[in-house]
Image (cartoon, rainbow, N blue to C red):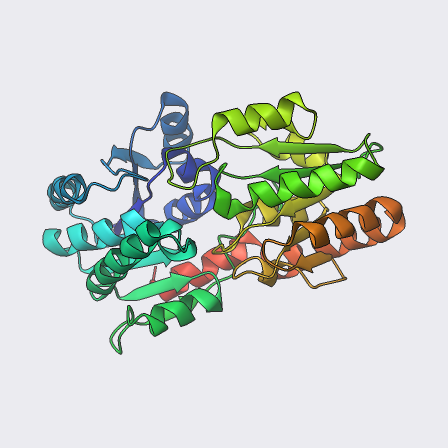
Length: 371
């Protein structure tokens, strides 16, 4: 009899953008796979169906802060899981990890697994509101992960902070993996463009380093006004989201070129010379891996998850957190030394090929889950 597995996320698009190869590998290994997230459109459902994956709607408030609504959604999730009766569940991102694990326990799912892909607002921000949310989340994580057979982490710093906060106990087993991996057949190495430009792809929230990117761009443009700074992403209801009027001002005064929310990031990556992510904290940043796969040097921060992707001075530079002046200085260096940039770009591709191939990452996941 086929093993039935539910893969649960908080954003439907992530099922095809980030978990597509994992879902396909599970199907190829003889599993009956159900991909679950809220409100998938017909295009996503068709992509999943094409590889033999069933889609099921799960009500999850990705960024909402209403605990009563979250618990009600958890109860509905438990009912649906009981009906599906899976042998395994694998949840990723914070709310699915918490409420998916609790719902799976209520539904009697025997094999519960979670993947920590980043810590989010409750752990990264220092505001009073964020600290309160962090305390609540820590308690919920401690409760939910107790029922997990194994918890996957994408960097060692997140394991350390979970241990410091007492979220993990002696019963909770962990497995370190190299991010979500990247499909090297989908993201192929391309030549660097003739016109020099920088690119950042992210949700437009403070913790992604959006302000540092813009402030560094202002400095660079004083010396090199012709350089383009592209920004792709979207504004959501995260408490640290930038304001639309700020974005409009940056665009109108020529500081950045806004690309909006992209269905396919490959054209944007191919048209950039250097990829930039000044984030405050990540699991392992998927966009950085995709940029490395296309053969791009990386500028990122000395932050958990980010620093693991760069060997400083070899495939890019690691700059101090929130230090837009140093970020600008490194940008100028890359503009002025194109041969160095090309050397770093080649090294990025080598690192991602050796370490972050999605097929190798998925092998570790499946082996750990005995699938």
